[in-house]
Image (cartoon, rainbow, N blue to C red; front, top):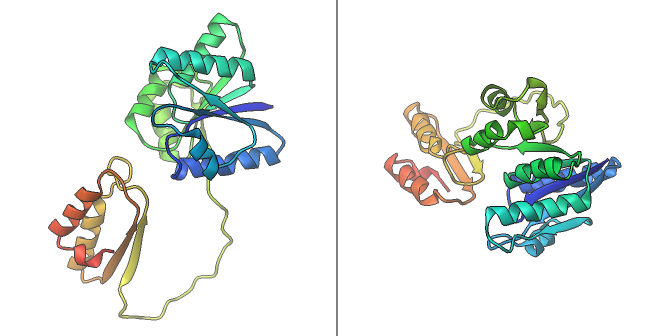
Length: 243
């Protein structure tokens, strides 16, 4: 089976990028013929992406016109040349239109699957608007799966669940000795509120302090709301507990 993944090259670090890196290698090991299509553009750097996430079979998707129509036509050309059995879309809505046109204009039998990694309203709106063009949506958590089934008009059997992560062995329960050392928490990730709910962090620390629980918090990451989080920690009078 030949599968064409189509993804942006605009970001190198992140959960979705790491997921794709691991997934492609695993599918190749299982015997699938995998090609990775990466978009280029003003904010997309394919060479930088591949330096961090090398892959043997890559096609470059250019959009020199800077318009949606140009993007769709460029996608159509790449998909037609590659002739995959399945197109898997990673957060690029124009792919659905490209596949729909190929089906209608060139009578190409191509299946297209969307992947959903976050609870984001615009993704759900896209799926609802384009449900007739989608063969399936694959979600990485049960809440996302329920939302797509409820809001997007796809048959339940077309909304699938595929978790990612690693299997951990069962470990014996360990009783920790009593200690006066504070409970050390860590947040690792992008600093934004819509999906990550970072403004819960000051509230958690304040509630712990009110309950008499000694807590510290290490934050590793950055994002568009870093300054807002810093101000919120100061306003909640818990910034001294945070690194």
